[in-house]
Image (tube, rainbow, N blue to C red; front, side, top):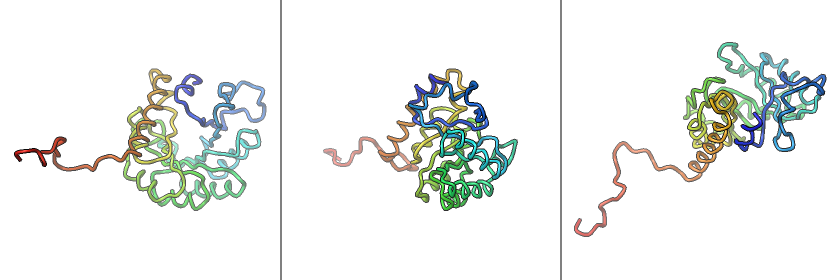
Length: 230
């Protein structure tokens, strides 16, 4: 994990509050293997199924000294792990009022994303595909629309399986990609972390460059117009 962090050149690492012993920080923890001087810590509320549970978990993380930032997850279905968007908006409102910097994980639905933005979310994190599925960006048009209509940063979260998925996400103009399984579950996580870094950089450069329009028919790369004798 430590080598993958280094290879990815990530600046932020998310950690499930439920995986940290908040009552006794002297015991072994995943935090022992994350250099918090190098990486900004983003606690998350993974495993929460109600707004109240997510709010309580975020508070525990802050009181344990992790951060006042939170990647907010409220799961609505145990099999698909799709978010409960109604509970997510409710929890966002409460935590924002309590001074949290809230980054909610949600569906790739513009209306829900707008409601989360209105609730005070500092960034919106729509899924590319179900958590851990590795399916890649299933609805690129939805992601592009969300980015176009929101004023807050958009970070694609979940579904990235390989480097090309990360590039596609960044080419849509999003501000970042959060990933775990695509790297952690790879045959060589360190090499995949490096590939993901390069993919994100390439996708961002491609977005900033501006791609050529899609056309139905061929266009000669060496046009005959202006050639002598034509």
